[in-house]
Every structure is written in C-alpha cells, then in structure tokens.
Image (cartoon, rainbow, N blue to C red):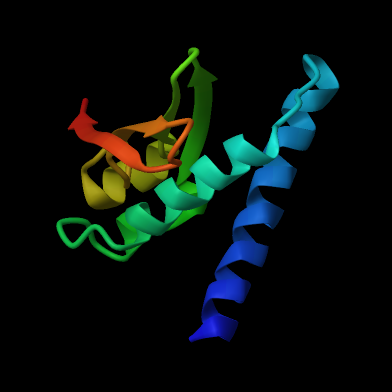
Length: 117
C-alpha cells in the first residue's frame, strides 16, 4: 500500500511540475509546502470519488487552478476540452467534471467540495 501511495505522489508531482513549468515560464510560479499538502489532500479525495468513472479521474484530463485567501486554498479541477474528433466519438465536450475544493490552511482539511458546470 505504501508503494502505491508513493507512486501516486510521484506521478502527481510529475504532472504538476510539467503543467507548472509552462506557466512558470510565462508568469512565474511559487508553491509553498502548505499549498502542496493541500493539493495532495484534494488529489487523494479526487481519486476516490465513486460517482466518477476511472476515465473521469485521470489527472491528465484536467487543468488545476489554485488560489488562496487568508484562511483557505481554493483548488479547482477544470476538465480539458476534447478535440473535435474526440467529441464526435463520445458525444461530449469533456471527459471529466468541474470540481472545486476549499481547504483550510491551518488544518489542511477539505472543508468543501462541490461539482459544477
């Protein structure tokens, strides 16, 4: 079990670093350890959402938006739009679902999770 968790963390960091590298070149990006912990808590929850198919839980199908205020991190999973040919095959514009997490900065616990379009 520990190996699976470690592998998941390695994959998550690889995906995040790849995504953030592009953004960092344009705007500059810094993440604190606390923010990364919040991302991991959300990702752990995201992987276990029973109402979503395996395909909908593939992190590569999402962009992740991170913002914060004094008390909370706001982490949004935004599904990427499919190509025109992919849309025709499955009759959908995206594979995933929009999910917004609110994470308390002090406790690093999810205080809210909501699905939206």
